[in-house]
Each structure stands twice: as C-alpha cells, then as structure tokens.
Image (cartoon, rainbow, N blue to C red; front, side):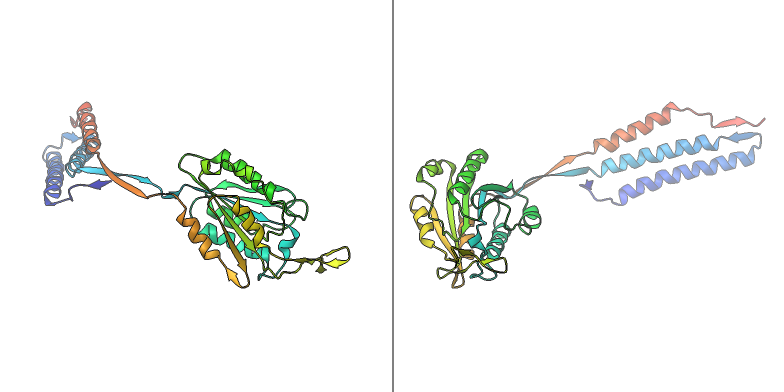
Length: 323
C-alpha cells in the first residue's frame, strides 16, 4: 500500500488528542470509583469500547492519507522467433579436426546461440533417422542444463547422415507451430559429407512461414580419420577419412531463398557472424511497462464505519451498584 499524502503533524495531532480523551475518561473512572465506593465501573466493557474507538479514528486517519496501490501492466520482452536446430550425430562428427572435436564444438556453438539470442528453440538430432530431441520451448535454462550437456552419439540409430529427413521433420514442425508474425529459422550443423540433399519441393512454401536457413559446416576440408573404439573407423580394411564439404551446403542454399552458409573449422570460426545474423533477422516485441494507480481510501473508511456500528451496537452497562 502507498500513500498519496505522507503522514503529517495534523494526523498525529488528531490521534494524540483522541487518545488523550480516552485517557482522561479512564482517569474519570478512577476518580468516580474512589469517590463513590458503592459504584462499580465495568472496565472490560469500557476497554472494549475504547479499542473500537481507537480503531475507528485510526482508519479515518489512514483514509485521509489517500492510500492507493500500484498496478503494473508489463508486456514481457520476447522474440517471436522459432529456431529449429538440426544436429548431425553421424560417425563423421566424431572427428577431432576442429578442437575439441566436431560434435563438442557444435554443442558449444548451440549454447552460444541460445545464450545470445531470444526466442524459442527446438533441437532435432539426425543420423539415418531424425527425431525431436528437445520440443519447441523458450526455457533457456532447461535447454542449457537438461538437454545440451547429455547430448551424445547413439541417441538416433545408424551412423550415416540423412539431412533430407532432418529437414523434412523441421519443416513439419515449422508448419505445425507457426503463428502470424513469427520468424522461423532452420539452423543445420553438419560436416555436410552427405550428398543426398533435400529436394527443392520441400521448401516450396518457405516464404509463407517467414523462414530463413543457416547452414553451418563443421570441420576442416582436409579432414582426419574417424575415431572408433580406441582406433580409427575402417571400411573394407581401410581407415576412413572424413572431410567437411562446404560445397554441399552451398548447393542446398542455391535452392533456397534467404539462406547463408557458415563455417566452423580450425582456420575460420563464423559463430559470431551467425549469431549476429540470427539477431538481425529476429522480430522483437519491445518491452513495455505501464504503471497505474487504484485509490483504495474507501477500504479504511468502510472499516471505520464497521467499527462505529459495532460500538453503537453494544450499549454495554458501564456503571452499576456494587452488591
């Protein structure tokens, strides 16, 4: 509760005069009982009425101070931006050519995106199959604490990389979750070794959903051997070398509108540029706050009237003869 007028000597004076008046009444009771021993004053009744009258005048004084309460109407700042983060968990993402490794670097970049952008996030993992690992949510803490740290290989079946299926699942959720005025983005992390890219027909309605694409190529173009069970992965008796192929990401971008390619490798790191571009494409609701006041002086006045009615309703016999 707030007061429009601060307490002044006037209010304190009123209360003091009234309290003094009650004390003088108590003194009169004492004098009457001493002077006329055959009379008895009902002190409990007098005390009850005195308390009611003190409460009455206190409520009147509070009403004079013009009490009010603040009503804060606030629109929380939020970005109407749905981001679908596609993460490649194929065996080639085990390569450590980009310290501390392609997959670990991807997890780190995911954390940076979530920390430095605003919106809602959905994480889709894919190998030969794709699945929703984290449903669309704006709860950053849950994603950073509960989803990203335990993310690891083996959550999806197979060791290949089916980017087409991942994009199909992402587009399905874009259509399902889209609302008017919402910005949608698909951000795909992969080494892009797979040459089986999504068909252009999958993105025919992309402009209807205000959709942007960010293809992130993780790994070096020179490549390294794929770690596997204490050694390296072999195929037909030969150690397999995995190389990042930015050309495949560019091929997909050529089929799309509003698409960009970024690289995370030992020689280049486009993470800062990626985050800046995401923020530039966000549609933000500005934080608005409105403070209104609601006068509540009538509440202490109603209490004062209630106490006054109680005082008048109990005409207690204050003086009687001693037996």
